[in-house]
Image 1 (spheres, rainbow, N blue to C red):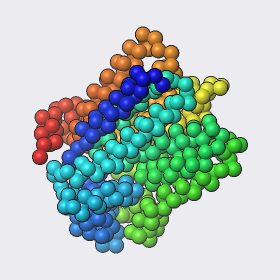
Image 2 (image 1 turned 120 degrees about the horizontal axis):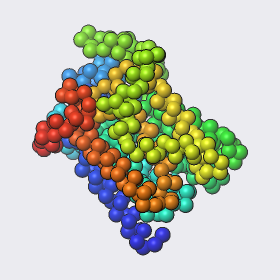
Image 3 (image 1 turned 90 degrees about the vertical axis):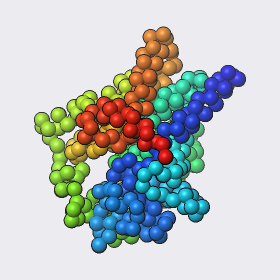
Image 4 (image 1 turned 180 degrees about the vertical axis):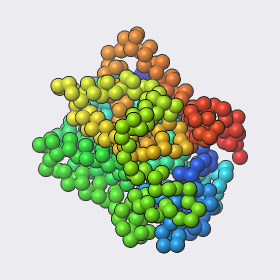
Length: 428
């Protein structure tokens, strides 16, 4: 790496850290992050899993009723990690509370933002296997972090960005293990990251299956598969323990409809994801809305228009550098998309585009690397235009990822219409 390239790489990663930090919101904005903050506060300040006595319990309906107590309905891993970050803050008097709150921002920064940045470092190192020059690797890492909704969801405490970062780290670790023909600790890193992702955002368990298949398919790695499996099990164990401590079962709380049907609940069985399977014209209309409608995931992440064809080419062309990993991403991604198209009902609720699919972004944008490998003026212009569009969309989203779609059904428009109040909400 030349001195100029080193400066470019360092500058871009410092810029990423700065932008990620500046976009962090200083308050819980919606039911989802209020529910997670309630769980963090309950564990640290009340020594309990029940959120009954927390400040956030009255502010969220993302909760379940089990044996006379309310609990967060979210998978426990993000809250457990958040509690680790919050505990020393609470000990020195920096307490979580509704409204403008430095503890919320610090917990988000110490979890979601930190892993977002570490995931982009892993992406940069992964691209080293492709032969892409260091400067272009850094630019692609920056484009992934800033030019998609991966940036938007760094602003708030959520599981989707965390899962996206962990799946990306696992992808990089498996690719490096395959390239080196060994790598016990690389497999352990991948297993740990996949376990954290699956116990934070359950459908991302599809990546554990797909990347596990890559490991098993390689004769050099097959005998070391325990190095992948054991850390995976260790990573999911705490969340399973929380499920059992609350309900007496290892089944995730959000999969038990009865827990949501408490007096005053806004939920009905029909509204819960998994309550039915979409088909026919309903499925077609719902898919169109999810992909290219007012919340359309493909419209809110314009770099995907380049990345998806390149991912498919990498998966099926012979001799491509990351072909096994591309097949894993394509298979797991298709499963994740199909899961929500078939089983969900509400376009991911009050949110900026389709938050459920954020974990697909960085592992798909990795495969833009051939576009940058042979960079003509036309390619550079196309990449630049799509990146700038994606950056603008992502920054608008970061003002409030939990978009109030009652203001306008199109989240981008809703956030723009609320621009003055959203900016004011960042002030004490």
